[in-house]
Figure 1: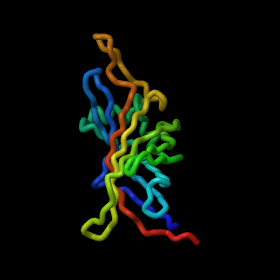
Figure 2 (figure 1 turned 90 degrees about the vertical axis):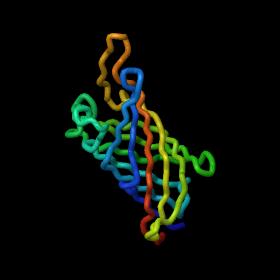
Figure 3 (figure 1 turned 30 degrees about the vertical axis):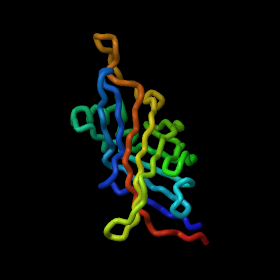
Figure 4 (figure 1 turned 90 degrees about the horizontal axis):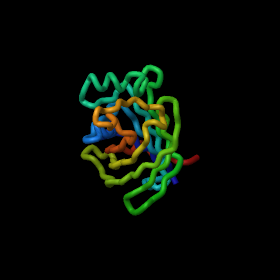
Length: 182
């Protein structure tokens, strides 16, 4: 079967995250500069290979002071580690539109396996004849596994930042030319 390549459309995609702040709310953020490449046999995503790269400099929480701190050595050390990378190692279909996507996440030079829930929102043709597929991706990671340990203790005994980071991403992929096997 022919391999199909799908690439992210950044104008209709978001690579987002949430983290607990002061134990009472969440701060949300995203990476504005990233690319997703999916290779799949035909239009079947159940055997897809997924690669994602995000430029750490592009982190945005809609607060420039906080974003500058995230780029600093307390968090991402973007000058030393300019990219985040995810490479899939396996995918399991859970039902008609839901998959468990396993892969290795590399952040700050450290790689750990993660599992993400992927919901396929459908596939359609746009007004220009391009085939598009939409996905909602969620998951959780523990930031300390990647050496992101910055925190402070509150007077009330709690901590400023949670350990768990929730991943919430919307991805719209565009089908590229189909490569036929030799």
